[in-house]
Length: 419
Image (cartoon, rainbow, N blue to C red; front, side):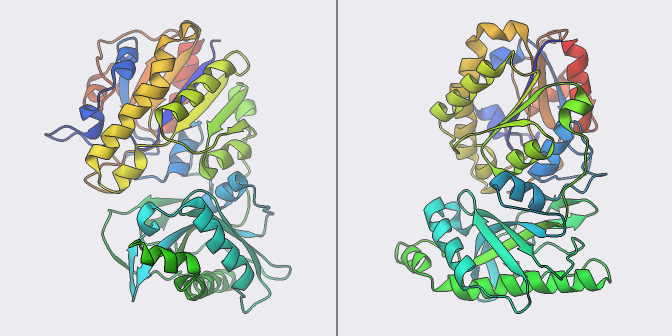
């Protein structure tokens, strides 16, 4: 069987509209050349009508069903960030945000919080925030505004059946669904999702942490300096996707018979890789052409050592969230200039099966994840060119692969093409 490479462009796709999307508007000669060598189609990464978070999208692309497995973004990010987690602890994905009076005005603190600033703020929370109960916690900033928090207690039982302390993502069953982007929200409150004492106590704990964090962060020197510079303060902490145990799932190699490598730079993807027993290569975050070239070099050097390589490429998703059409187009072009320029000229391509897709759509019109299907390109092995000329949403709708109703179906297709 030929080695399989799955290249996932985080949030690069958008929506088929009368005008062009950023993906259509972008100049991507290298990716388009690859599209001409293969077959196109489109895919609902989790399922039709579901606007997934990245973790659910990635889990599905790796051939697992996020609707049947409570993956817990909190637990996954704790694993990805290297925070100690034991079954019975409570882990949540966290993020610095900006509140003013009784409104949440910026979920990402201007998206310009540096990692050193976040680390200073996190150190203050770990030192100064004291909870009323016997609960201890570890708060760890990761990249920019992102963070993870893990609560633990010797005598207290936690529950994951709580609402998100983040109004942009609503819990539904085992996953969270992205809500349409708006400018301002009411300050959130965490609510129990069942009548158990554990859920009531856990929701109260999250609320206590959130509002005590605001008191500590609001006048912190980092935020005083940010205000002087005309930047919004990172004076609040959002939390979502609670989990109290690691998901017990079959490892990737045992499930698919492929020796796997995960190449990524953020805790969600890294944590999923570790949960599934994949070898993980963690890279420094970066979205410039040189950063993408390093990722392409690593992927190509790994071919032959692994039967399956997953590489996650950040860049287009954030400007999609911010509604910045031109910046999203530029980020896609940088992907092409860096990663796909190296991939397209590699002589190793003839001995590979490659899939290029996205973990979800992030239309600039929505300023958030949507349930729009994403493009899929497959080339190499038994795949045959279908006349596609570009990797776009519109070309994908006309491709010979048709529409995959679930992202978890993709890997089985790739194995058939590679055999």
